[in-house]
Image (tube, rainbow, N blue to C red):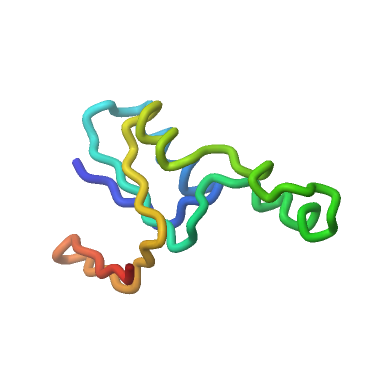
Length: 94
């Protein structure tokens, strides 16, 4: 089965890794419109307020890390703009 997850921040990455633990056979792809995935977005106010100096300190995982550790494909800078549930297709803005 091919599983597509839209959004690669904390919720999307967590869902993808959980699905991987349930099945090694499924193809899992995450589409994220931003350049970063799996970051602690709850820490953004601390970054903006200067408490956390480096934004990358909020990063939990990288596309390469998800691929090598969990065999999950991550497409960054890919925005899903349309979903056709009947045809099981999505339209992307890259």
